[in-house]
Length: 347
Image: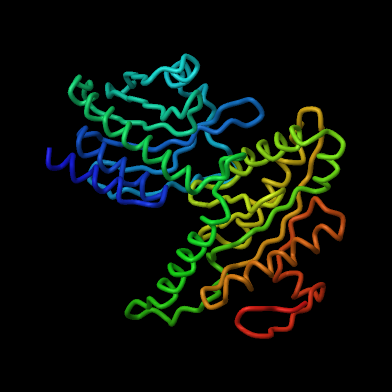
């Protein structure tokens, strides 16, 4: 009982979805004596449901966020999980399956109304007892309720993406983590530089091309549907550890965590092409323009956001349906900047 209460206190003490995921799988792993517990994202793309792990804990190992091997992939098709697929189709609370190795897998979708975009997966070498399922069910209920509370304060009501208020907090955390990583030098290691070419944090600003024409021609209901579908494509195109925000209107922002320039380009361009290839009901084809920039822990957020905005403006004024990297534009002489002070930058 003490262990259960400790986990409940830990879960409800977080104000961040990532830490909430880590907390719930840690609780389930210990209390169910599982060999592996995962949080799965259930994403729907072009009418098909895909499963992608976003947090995992295995026996004897610490919990971790998952990085999908193909960042552009929405995950594995739901057809590979027939028991889970049937559970979702019938809006059931759980599904269990015996594995080829003799172990047992239990899936617990997190239903929010009639929709489930998150699922817990618990793998155990032995069948689950009624007491174990009862305890796990209680943990899942707390997890679902607290997810709802976080969503209410952090999410955009139309698209379900994180909102502008949450962006400020997330960017501040990312900058703080970057400063800490840059300042950490192990014995025998050369001094770290702020902008290594290996892995950086990135900020991308996304704008729907000619969105006003969509609203004017088809009406705001279809315009809202376009925004919802683009939000779904954002969620399925980016990695579990990235953060996607709606800034308002037709503008979105993505924070990409720890990846190389080549991989950032691949992820962003895959999303852009996914939008271009999507058939939007009634509207037809829609495209997006993107401007992105690396995040430096030693620059003000307003400068970072301003640079991404300028790359976006360049993309929109040079044909649209483009993804432009700020530093490459500057290096190629296509943008010129003059630093004025710590809080503003003039072009």
